[in-house]
Length: 196
Image (tube, rainbow, N blue to C red; front, side):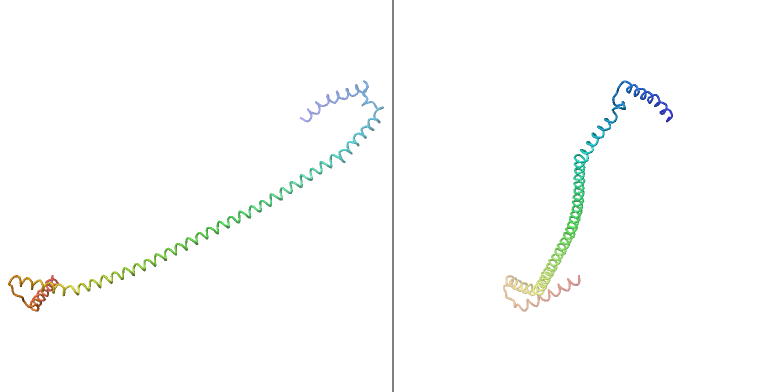
């Protein structure tokens, strides 16, 4: 393939040489040796002037712009790095605040729960104490009623019996006799009750 490219370039080179000789013979001043010194002189002045303009005016401005841009980029990078560090610190502070808030909320919840449980326990103790006092009071009242009820029943039975006898036969019977009869009947009833 390289050989093909090389051989295809030979005819082009030949055509270029032919055109060069034709231009020299036709009077092109660039190829005439008489004008070469003046051409070199003006070429040197032109490129020297161009070099001075580039090195003294244009290239320093380009270099200064590049340095300015470089320093600006470095400042931007430093600023971005500082902002990144600040953001990381703020994120850490935010995470710490959230963690502390969770711990504090948990502590508040536990304290409120303990307080509620303590209040419930105290109220339960007070209620149990009140209920126990009421039950004891009721038991005492019931016991007192049990102790007093036979006497009241006997008294009522004696009075009722005395009134009935008086109305039936017209004679007033002694309370002691009626009391003995009522006591005897109540003893029999008690025996029958306990026997059943």
